[in-house]
Length: 342
Ligand SMILES: *[C@@H]1O[C@H](CO)[C@@H](O)[C@H](O)[C@H]1NC(C)=O
Image (tube, rainbow, N blue to C red; front, side):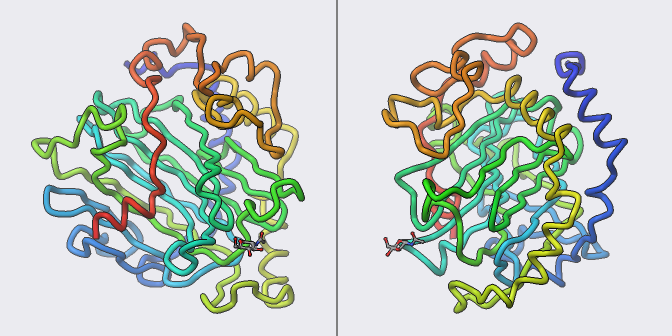
């Protein structure tokens, strides 16, 4: 099965990891210094040194943790190893949100990992919400050039006043630029970082056709290299004074992970061309009028059918795609699922 993943992009990932150990030099935060269990406390299992944490889903409970503070802009990162074997219905989420504080006008940035019947091939989804834009989901879904259950890979979310970048390892896979056209849909209020594992049987895997099977439990998702950088702020400061976060914003802007070099942009384009399987920008059934923030790329558009899913099968990853291109129902927000578990 290894050769299935042996694509030029895998080499690119390897090269990027070797050449730029930049993310590895970003200081990490011990669990007790930056995070607190959110639910299923018995299933939040810290390593003895407090730097790694396992989130466990068993037949009694899922689990999750949350950053102890809210952040106004930031870089949020973790190395995550997903549960292997049969993982239908199992959802792992790594995301920022303020849904607990601003119920109607919340902001959210998601990485969601949707389990699959064969266990090996997880689908990954990113999403962006701002100011309660839940009726305007901006989902994208991707396959991966590696097996995310075999070893940990780094997933990162950069959120600044100008842009949002989702990274897998050192490769940017999605960038959202702030624009006037996007208006309030661009996240603007302080957010917490969340990590959760929970039973999404009702919708996660092929629209709920395949449910979590607790014969394979416990499902364990391993988190390490926890990074929290940004301007810590209190929940009451809905719009922190610019001065209050200026220094932190400048630090973020100067960091390696904020620089969108031509090489990184090219890597992002290659990743998206090869691995993106769904984009809201091409889903004309759901959104007859394309969003103003969509940068419609003709070569991408050609690949996507009216439903926003890839229509042509790329031979290289055909075997993977056949298993995973059937569309799941539009996912609920991670925060909803998490609440359902509490
Ligand atoms: C967010 O939504 C609220 C309520 O719909 C609205 O009053 C407010 O102006 C919006 N804020 C932004 C920044 O768009």
